[in-house]
View 1 (cartoon, rainbow, N blue to C red):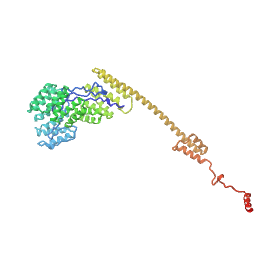
View 2 (cartoon, helix red, strand yellow; view 1 turned 45 degrees about the horizontal axis):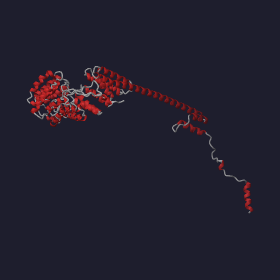
View 3 (tube, one colour; view 1 turned 120 degrees about the vertical axis):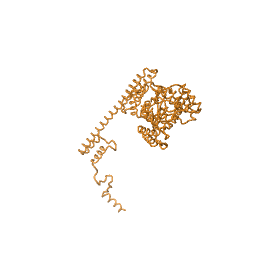
View 4 (cartoon, rainbow, N blue to C red; view 1 turned 90 degrees about the vertical axis):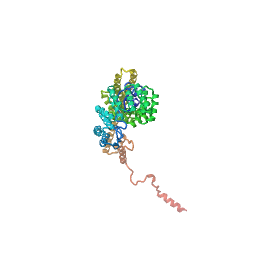
Amino acid sequence: MKKLNKIFILIALFSFVSCGTASTASSSDSGKPEGSKVEGAAVENSETSSKQRESEGASENTATGNNGAKDDREPNYDGGKYVGPAAADFEEGLHAYSEGGCEKAVKSWRSAFDKDPKNAQIAFNTAVCFERMKNKADAAAWYEKAYLADNSFTKPLYNLALLYMPAQIKEKEGYLMQLAEKNADVVEKYNFIAWLNLQLGRSDEAEKYAKMVLKEDEQNAEAVISLATLYFNKKMYELAESALETAEKWDPDNFRLQRLYGFLLYRTGDAKGATTHLMKSVKANPDQPEVRNILAVLAMKIEDYSTAKEQLEAALKIKDNFWSAKLNLALAYKGLEDYKNAAVVIDELEARNDLPETLRNSVIFNKALLYLDADVNSDKNPARFDTAVKYFNEYLKLIAKSKNFKEQKALVDGYIKEANTEKKKLEFALAAKAKAEKRKQAQEAEAKQFQLNKEAAFKKAEEAGTAEAWSKYLEEYPVVDENDTLSLSAKAKLEALKPQPAENQTPAESVPEQKTEEQSGGAEENVEAK
């Protein structure tokens, strides 16, 4: 039984940023099994003020060599493009990183920065590596060094803010604003302040600073993206799309623009358009786990589970604790009929005690569905349906206080009924199969005994060596077909024992008629009489 239409897809919380690297907001797909929303899915709510962090790390051109520390891509660094006193250390760091070695890379880049302390991008690469090594303190220190080395390079400022989200962002707001004030470029400064206010949920302030940017630069794409984000959060989708269409004319390769555009089209039901824009965003900046997660969801909706698996593995390489993407990876495995790996991933998630409540609910629900839909252990054991029922009941306990419990209970009760029905059907099928197998074994045993008896009778007739013995054998074991070698042999032996005609004997009817002596003489007399 295969019911992949019951795949329960959970999209992680993600964010829309107007500048810098990624932040977060919550948005997701309910993963509606058979058209019904299941409690435990991430809620459809894309408020940019949501604080869950999704750092992109090194984004776009982050190194002096025009490329920086990047995950999930072929090494394409060219250290030769860097000209300065730290060329050897810089290139060594790039090679170390391309081989997956952040620890070795930071040693080289720290040495490079000591030799070239005004190179902000080297410091930025170092910070990104420290962050990916989960060394928050050193990451913060190096992001600050990068920004102070060249405050026109604002990416470190954005990543520093992201590093403090969600717990410390309000505490660090004043400090971040002080750093922003060091930027002599008012456009860059106001763009950052607009973005920061979006993260803090201050829509009016964000709009104010975005419009201040547009007064200075009426074709500034980042400011328009901030405004589009505001419209998106307010569900003013037509205004948001209009703003993005305008900004795209000015900056078509802006990964933040393409990401927001993709999220917008996804929200409004244009899966094809969403995929197109999200792919553009990932092409411009591959280090976006939340975008890859949604691309995976879109792929699964058209049953392209191989693509989904690739996107989710890439997302988890960038962010290994992206638990909702990991759950989606289990669903991709399920779609590929790799049920054992699907179960392994779900079991790993179930064993964690740090999952958000809604995600834990999703894990339990999807485990129930997995055992309902698939023979996970490939043993055709009806007990898997008991496992499914167990987890469906556990799921109902987890959501007992939810507002739509009745709706969910009706849905889950249907699945439980299905599990019980399928269990009975499988048990009946297994019993019928066992009965048929038993009958087959009996028939095979009977045939084997018949053959043994036949061979024994043949041997007995052979020992007797008489026609009577072979006749009796053939009466009991007549020739069946041309493959019946024993009976054919018996028939030949019987024929050989039958009496044969004498040699050179002429049949009676063929002997010429002999005339009598009188008949011969009479003839002669008749001749003489003439």
